[in-house]
Image: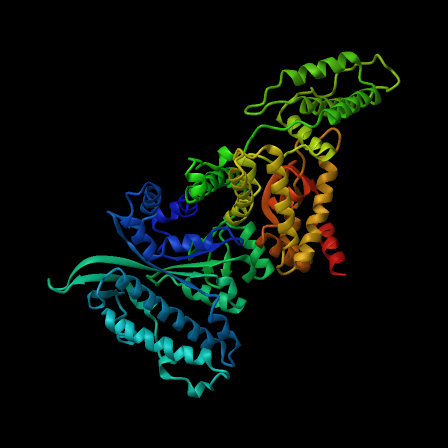
Length: 623
């Protein structure tokens, strides 16, 4: 079910260089962006399962991708990965009436004990006897080896179990015991991450000859469940360069303060100091599962490939479809456009004639515009009669705008426009968008629209795709064609998006909705202008980058709303966007918002505004 594309895209380069395992890796993303799935793929049992089944067609690409990431070599695992979810137990430490240093110490000791137990459990589950498992300690840590139970697997497991049991008694107590009553096992020095360099499998029948060696990898998932103070402490602890254990920290933006969250999104490629003595790119790697300006087109194309692969794998698991050799979702989604009804087309024809008369467009100019539209042949698209009329209407309005000195009372006047009129993809998209809002013509259909409406979020894609697949399954059961026409796709996608937005239930969701509504209204106003200055229209709100950079200090409430809006896919922030010789930060609406409100999925069109207008919108909702 898992596509290798996001692993190759997000982790391939750093994995091949080894940087994925020699320092802290922080992977951030919105809910459903694939963080936990990435973590589970690198879990040792998953890697060994892949290797056992590497000849199966569906697994070959995944094995090849993990080889690129240096997790596998010569058909054996190089990593001993374990995933520890932080959403259970660990938050409780922060409620203890202990000094912060002690609370952090208890938490990190429990994490290390459970990691050691998980590593040993994975190896023994692979039929490796515990007596054959040993570690290679880091040089200079001889004095600390005894504190973690020695170098053999049996001693390591015994010590880890005793530490976990002692600390769990503290967590499970109704009333936290006084510091003086804490067991020694919970407070004594226990730092296996400082000691362990490799896990080895030894053949004890041959003078302890090492047969395999693994780099231990701990993946701490759901770090957003921690208290912000805990998160910063664990970040500092794991960022120490002397650690030899590979460590990943997976989180959402929720855990950070608003200024930190916005900085993470908008400054991901800059070398910045996040904590005293800890600098991005030198001490840790930050991987953001979200579009950025320099890679947006590449990431959209990559997501399309991943989503299609994921959907096709899903269909192959459903007998209703696989039994009929229906294993490609794109084949079920028609890309044939649907024209408006004859009566609406007659109304549209009359509207175009009225526009010509109202703007005093001469017959000669109208013929020239008709000819321009007729010769346009978009790649992969068919111009239907209704779209052709819509394009003519847009070009007539553009002609009127480009001949401002022309008198409307001079019926024979036909001056050349200040800028040539061209029928292009922008005019085509504008006509299609106008027809959607005026005549409810289907606009969202086909596999690419489905992928683009998901905002590069796997969970949103599956949510939208499931609705289409279920409807196709019903048609099969009723002995109808499994293919969904454009109208059915359009209707289902918009209904699903509207339902998702109505069911939003996250911090600041009402203010996020209010802010999105304000941006939607402004985008629609510009999108539906008769001359379509932005082609397909706008789907983003732009403020100057210099204003955005001061937003957390000047408008902290707005910063918090943006933080949660981005974290839950209502918005995407596009920093440092160059346009009109200025640098902007775009607040792009998420795919669900675009579907629900009938806005374009094409990127780049935005309306100009300011931070104060956004802050006022958020403030009105608060009142």
